[in-house]
Image (cartoon, rainbow, N blue to C red; front, side, top):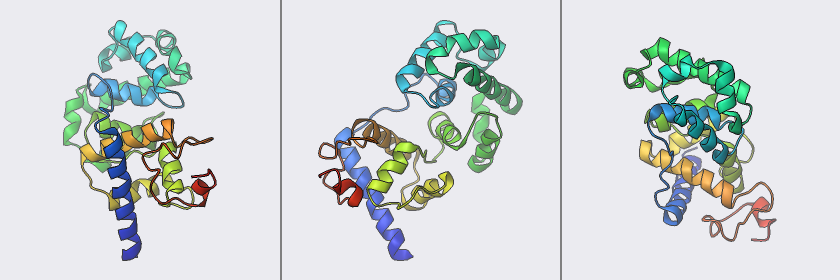
Amino acid sequence: MKRQALRVNRRLKSIYSAFEKRYGDLGWWPADGPFEVMVGAILTQNTAWSNVEKAISALRSRGLLSPEALSRVKDGELAVLIRPAGYFRQKARKLKNLCSFLENECSGEIKLLSGIDTDILRGKLLSVNGIGPETADSILLYALCRPVFVVDAYTKRIFKRHLLIDKEPPYDELRNLVHDNFPRTVEQLNAFHAYIVETGKRYCRKKSPLCRECPLGRMKRNVQCLAYGV
C-alpha cells in the first residue's frame, strides 16, 4: 500500500512539474472578485468558457455581478442575459439559488464565509439545488481560496491515460487521490487544475489527441496512449 501511494505521489508531482515547465502561471480563474467566480462556476456547466465570458459580460454591463443585484432581477430577464452560456433557464434558477444561499448564510457578505470549516462549507454548497461537487469545489478553490482539488472530465481522461487510474472512480475518490498524494496548497491546486484543463483542451483530446505535442509527451504512457502512435 505504501509503495502504491509513493508511486502515485511521484507521478502526480512529475505530471505537475511537466505542466509547470510548459505553461508557467496561467492566471486562472479570470474574474473580478469571488462572486463573479461563483457565477462563472455555475455558468460554465456543460459549455465552453468563451460562452461564459459573453454571459458574464452581459451581466456586468447591467451591474448585476453582486448577490444583491442578481437576486432582484426577474428570472426571465436573467435567462435572456445569460443565454450565450446555454441551458439559460435552468442556470438562471441556479444563480438565484446561489443568491438565496448567500443571503441566508452570510447576508450576501461573502467574506463572512471565511469562518466556516471547509468540509462544512462544502456540504452547505452541495445542498444548494444546482451546485454539484465540481461546481462546489470550483467555488471553494477559486472564489474562497480553500485548498481543494477540482475534478472534471479532463482530469479523468489525463489520469487514466497516464496510469494514475485504470477506471473512472467516483468524484470524491479521485479528489481524495490528489488530496492524499499532492501538496495541499491553494496555489498549487489552483495551478494543477488550470494545467489539466489547458492540456485537456489543447492536447489530450477525447478524439485525435496530440500526444507528441503534449507537455506529458515524454512520460511513460499506457497501452491506450501507445495506440495513438506515440
